[in-house]
Length: 193
Image: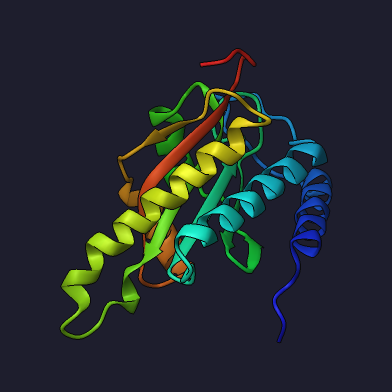
């Protein structure tokens, strides 16, 4: 099976956003939520594509890396998440168990890109030596993301802390993945950071 193109992935995310608007949902009272406009979905997909393309110039083997892109985790918005690899983007369940942790850690940003690496691929005698390599590659991908997102949304920042609830959520779908680095962008109030 051929992985979907970035354009097909964007269309799938837009369709999911449209269907989510019509689905009844029970929301917590602590936040007022509205749907993310399709333009945001396209903008996030373009940032992901640019970041992976740039990262590929420095790190040819991109298969161990994934990015959880999150919008609407804090402030007025419906939490939306997608898991992206170099060749595919799939919707990812934005569970309150980890989106609330992100809302507390990054209350004033609209977008988060959670860079992950597949430590499940590390086997054998080289496993311990590969950790620094994966960490450096994740840092390079975070830098590529920061540059890609800074064009449409100035003020992106790299945060070197990881969050266990995010790693747990990612591992439910992608065993072996671990959250390593976060890139935040797009302040909720629209001002540069």
